[in-house]
Length: 136
Image (tube, rainbow, N blue to C red; front, side, top):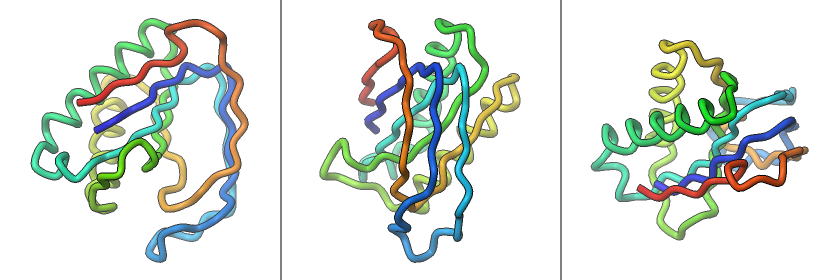
């Protein structure tokens, strides 16, 4: 798994192009203030390491949210960080698992529409901990 974690003063999106035939039809966007936004790329090797990658993802999200003193987390599928790609069903399972685990401990967690390219607006501070890359 490869992840770019961003702390953002504001993150907004609107669905633009549907890329997966089986994805739900979504037309509404959303916006978030004071949030950690995770651009997540699940790789084929993650299919055999579900527990490990979800646990590491949860720990990294909690760590960055704590650094920025925020409780809002947004999960975004970003399959552009490696040529190796996981099965889309597994990606959705990872997202749902991570969302449930974080919600249980007090975070507000949202997912961007799965299977879409999005129009995005980003406002992020120019500090080193505002952008963190992890690979596990």
